Length: 485
Ligand code: ADP
Ligand code: MG
Ligand code: ZN
Image 1 (cartoon, rainbow, N blue to C red):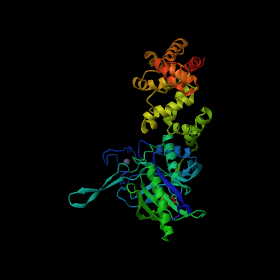
Image 2 (image 1 turned 180 degrees about the vertical axis):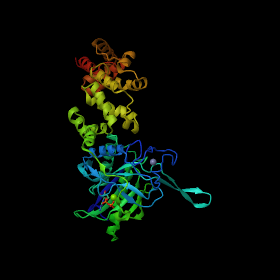
Image 3 (image 1 turned 120 degrees about the horizontal axis):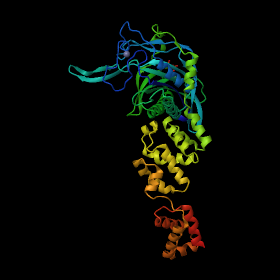
Image 4 (image 1 turned 90 degrees about the horizontal axis):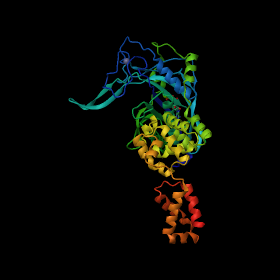
């Protein structure tokens, strides 16, 4: 088998749960982890005779995602019924959008393996979620166990974001999903939490010989519960499909399930065709109409997006691209950084260094997402300011950090209280140097014989003698004088 002769072609379908208070077509609250079947009503239970009413907030949040991805938003779109039978779908159909979705086109810039390109979208449409089934619970007279259905999730508002089949590697898919998750969170449209299922992804994978332009037979992979699983599943599918084709076994379109333990995909069912769903327009809902002033309102309320913000931090503040990218990994985190810079605009690079090394190292991922930095932005700025103006050395600042965090005191208050002010007066530094030079004639001899690398040892001695408080620049100058003069 020669994988090098082949390339994968990937299209991703992502479902993002919108952060509305209530469900898509009824007034039930959207809750996670509530007791089963407690957030339900006749509408989301699919009782005959009930009528859906569209939740405006659902449309508003979807429009934020669509605007952020530069989609073409259609003033008029329609809902359709996607008919299928499953116990977690009490109506017997899902309200979705089909041939006239709310948005088409748009895309997202991705970077992988040193290459940046745009993944284009086919469509973003609105739909409702189904309930949840839990299988194989032991039960008295049922040897095989039973299935339970929880309909709390039924009717939860979703957007489905569908790419064109133009993702060219597992790495690109990985970057796309990371950026998409960041974006839906950034515009406050979704929690983007894959573990809780508020972001779900199905991967469509086919392969073709390099140079071939026609698409191969696609396999849809489900049960992908993390971005890392998506990457693994694509890598596995690529190899598996190439192996099949090279062995002369043609693929047929099917749906497969990823088994995270084994790192492989397994057959689930042969893929249904669109016509199996008997799509038709939802008769109980009118068209979705997006008046221009609503769109203007949404556009006006959009924050600066992560990619342009990172570029601005690079060009306006001189941050390295990687630092700007990390700072812009979550909006509250970037807000923290810029608030610190606003307190001490003279040294944005030093503030970034402190934030990304000393502080980020003490934070969890959830802290970063929420912008929960253990030091108020003004205190980080104040600390850097005192290093910059020579009040304390960088080394002392690092020593102060744990207490700064634990006490909540301002850097100035703590520096005062602990007597940490750096000594720049020449008198005491000269005294310390004289004492060290007198006490160590051998080392002085060595230095003067040309082994100037021992200079650092002398610096260390002076810092020790002054409890680390001597201004390093002054120490260097006076020490050179003493040793060479
Ligand atoms: P279906 O009707 O089976 O859902 P769609 O045309 O709606 O198929 O495409 C679903 C997803 O599959 C899209 O993300 C699309 O880009 C992707 N896709 C379609 N054909 C292929 C293919 N040959 N290889 C990989 N991905 C594909
Ligand atoms: Mg589809
Ligand atoms: Zn309801």
